Length: 288
Ligand code: SF4
Image (cartoon, rainbow, N blue to C red; front, top):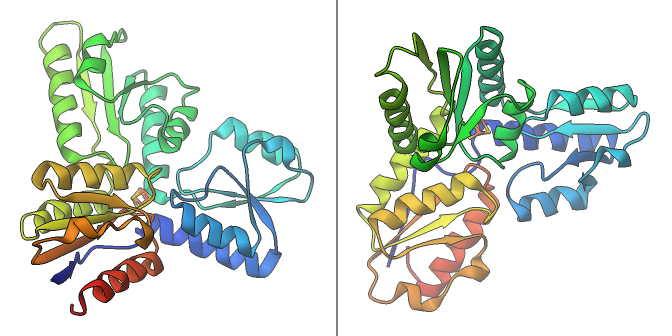
């Protein structure tokens, strides 16, 4: 059984940057906090926690001179202000691509557009983007959401959660255009493709590797939206595609009558987990 590892694998730029900033701060400052998981990978979060990173679910636990790192998904401006007013030090690890989406959302709102974000309503990144317009933007995840949408201003601005699939963004933008571009009520529509290049490349790689393997392992946190999306893409091309977090998730029955296993990962999966899983597969088969 051969093992084929996708070229584009491991941390994306934004996650690597956030983890590096956290490691650096742990060395320099010692313990500090993050509001929510710093990245969506439980094993990597545990590794950082053992070094002193504290995951909190409320800023009430912070006191003057504490340090808080803003995770790659960003944070709502009103929370940032509350934290600053407590005298807490901030390390901003918001991914620059998420910042770009936040700024576009704010600019559109300031210019009087009805803003529509294509993404997952409860995802921390989408919540942070909405925080820049005090929650006054619509979020659509599906065609059903587009159907129910009611916009009023005469101008509509559309952007995407950075890890959306290109297909979903395209489908929902098409549906929005069909709904609002046909009548006289809308005189300006602006569309910003804020899907980050890393996400688009990974989605392409997922399709490619699914076409040349018998089994695909998508490695990533079960709480990672982009890993789940990759698993969905692989599953739509190949029945035997499995989303795993660690080598303990591997089931011997998956690899019967298999010539080639493909490995791909979400954007928040560290190399050390990928290596462990590849090693477990090699040990199982005695060959690469
Ligand atoms: S997936 Fe893209 S937008 Fe999200 S953290 Fe990574 S580089 Fe940034």
